[in-house]
Amino acid sequence: MIALPAKVRRHTVDATGARRARFWVYGLLIAFLIGSIFPFYWSFLVASRDSSMLTEQVPPLLPGGNFLSNAARVFDSVPFWKSLGNSLIVSGTVTLTTVLFSTLAGFAFAKLRFRGRNALFVIVVATLAVPTQLGIIPLYMAMAEFGWAGELQAVIVPNLVTAIGVFWMRQYTMQVVPYELIEAARVDGCSMIRVYWHVCLPAVRPAAAFLGMFTFMTSWNDFLWPLVVLNAENPTVQLALERLQSGFYVDYSLVLAGTTLATIPILIVFVVLGRQIVAGIMQGAVKG
Image (cartoon, rainbow, N blue to C red; front, side):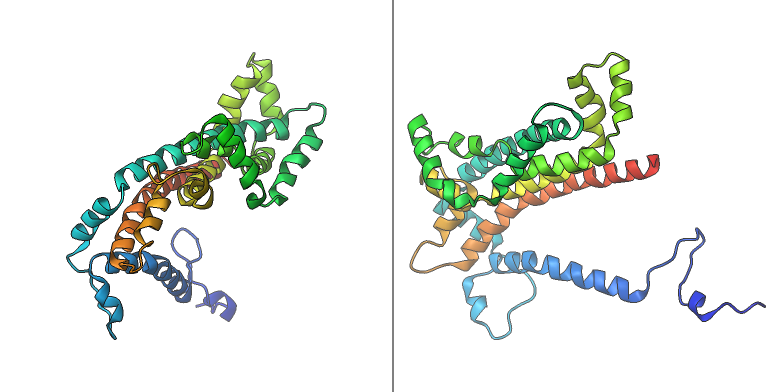
């Protein structure tokens, strides 16, 4: 029997020839998973009981039976259904337009040759250095001039496209869409918009899915601008949660019940778009 060197014996190899991870790698992954899930579990734990559990020396580790009653109190305390609908409209519209315009602009900046391309791209990237707070007052004045103050379009229109989305899609398009593929499509008679739709868009699907997930989460969690431009009769979900804790006494079971309900749409979007990201990456790996 031939003895293997000690360095080789340290790694376990399975039947396919792939090197198995050591046990401490799984330990780190499990610890990271527990640390990521614990805040959500703690929110649900408090939401399923009353606020008195927070004063106990040894808090319970299992959920109680008050979540449905606390959720009913949330809907009785604030217009939560309307705020959820408003947030879905705003976040869904902003996500769709941001992905569409960012992929279009990224394709143009990455693969089309036109005068002033680099200068325009530098201007787009330079807007990232401008703090959002600086534009709130003039932006609110513009929305009031349009008669949009208090309406959802005042939240949607200023966020139809983002500079970070354009930058992200431009960098990704430069790497995954070769010029030869575009030229071949043009030779076959495709217009430039068909090249974008049939060549560029399928290739950048993983990056577009990530951008959509990031945009939806950012728009869903946005608080400052909706607080400025919307009113109490037409809130988003973050404004509704703020109203739950605006009293002299804060009922954390009520607040965290609303927070748990507001987290569900984000988890659904994460699951749906996360599958698209993984599928696109695996498809690219197989083709490569």
